[in-house]
Length: 405
Image 1 (cartoon, rainbow, N blue to C red):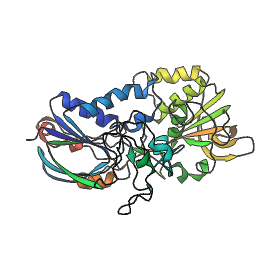
Image 2: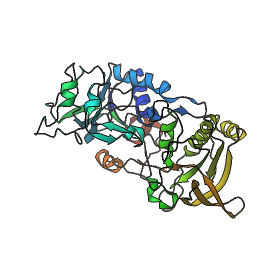
Image 3: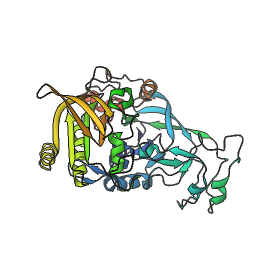
Image 4: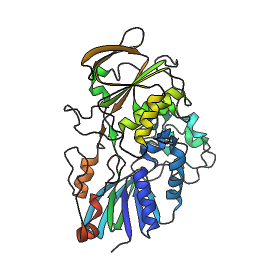
């Protein structure tokens, strides 16, 4: 039996799984499809309910994963095939080239000269990046990455643009790397920690997302709060750059909704309460939260909820029917379900908490792993006890919205 475990996904769940495994004496191959490990937690400002710095907690773990001799870290990689049985799996992994070698000193001289400007997915699309970039300041592995899909150099037509190559004094850029390589590993078990994505709120046009710049998703608002974000930690209205006087946070956008997802996403209540608390801290005078039910079930969660209410945040039990500009801001029409009355309010900014959904490629991964997905589209968990729990494959382990089952 191999002493190696494959961990798929380099978010906080995959990182912690890898560290726990090597602490127990196993070797780990950690596969991450993105340019850095860290996942969603790496781009958050603070964690609830303690308001501790998110990256301050995760960065040491990321660094340990990158430096541990018993952890093999493969970024820009995806699992392509799995064969064998429990204790003796043969895994085929395809890894794309990053075109930047370990000579990179992260001097950033290559970035200003790159002529290609792209939406930055690590800033939730509200800022830009170049075709050569590092995802976040604490990225692991560290060197820059070239996005060949958008780079002007397209094989075999190399060097129509060599500005980054010329600017790189250490000579770290290598456009002649093989485009990809295939890695095969023998592993005893597989842990799937592929995390989640968020529903696109533009599928609900009545909420105004994508039609008005001051209607944001929760992750976009998170980047406004973060000192390393595009606004340096200032809350501003994207439409005109002014500081909002009033913000409405809307929960359960697409979740517990027969049109989209029936499940509760479990943590949207708490991160929206955290956002409301931080908005007050940032000087926003009028902060409101519109909810279906507040589900504050974890340690310290309910106390944080009450603390936020004491800070002056208004909680409204209701569902918005329409968000539209009215010349003075954003007009929100809604039903107050506590009273049954139809109401209207005007605010400067609306922040939506979209439903958590499975990653788009999770079904394909499930087919590769030969496992089922449940009614919500996440990997189906198996209840195992006794001998079966100890000896059957670890496929049933998966991080569903960043929680161990």
